[in-house]
Length: 196
Image (cartoon, rainbow, N blue to C red; front, side, top):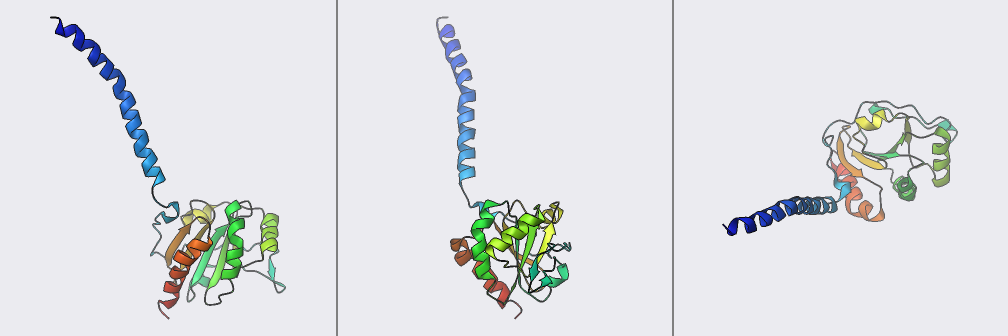
């Protein structure tokens, strides 16, 4: 009979500690899962599919050699390799990647297309005035609906679109010197070589 009273407090202590052990185990699991992997490698369900067929109006007042820069026309993807960049003037990483986009625009083997995301037109024009406009087309996505169709998680995001109008690659996050050299340029070269 003396064994029963000693077993009850041990069992009670174990039952009290069990939730704490479970919590610590779950916390460690989440910690390691959230810390692992590259967030810019979020897979896109649109890879290998046609680019969204959503036309977007031009950024009013944005001119190139005295002519209005056109908006986004899905037909413009046919026959050309395109780099589509979703950006906004209020996006801090967009400011960081702007000089790299300006450098990319010097390569005339592909077209650089911008989708201006939920931005005020004046701010977007000031942004492009500050860094230079690298885009041959700028479509305004005022309500964010077109970006949802592109599968955008947040700005900036960049897509490689092949000559057939198919999305070939998606880069989540800003273009950096490192991912430009190791990821984006090789993806662009692959797209340029396909079907040439």
